[in-house]
Length: 163
Image (cartoon, rainbow, N blue to C red):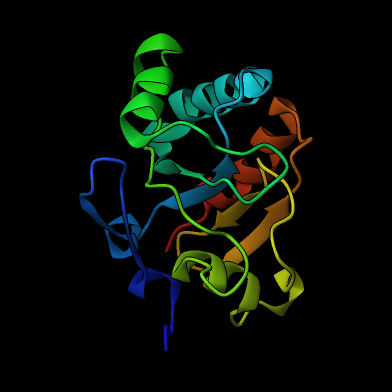
């Protein structure tokens, strides 16, 4: 049983092991996504946020999935190329995961079933975001329709907190 956020692991799009413990003392924004071009503005918003706040130890982790409203249809190499080369999005891209159901990835099990009961329902839309504080506490769950200014204002106070 996973006891805390920092016990979790995943793999990036290149199959490298990513430990959430590497993000201790960071604010982490976990985002479900599909590369659908209709969401280009959402991706550029996240890129801008990351660029502006990464020096304050913000991390944005993108988790592609094909279980939600817009399905991620690209294979890993295509997705990597589409985001990093074609769209110039430089955010860390994780491997495609399930975010609900019996095969739900452990990170999303923790986010939706863990000790933070206020977030206890399955992810239903792409660009659902979870804000994890510097201490590993899930502090916010945001819908897909948040704008840059609101997202900045939500995250910025957590960046000011010390551990």
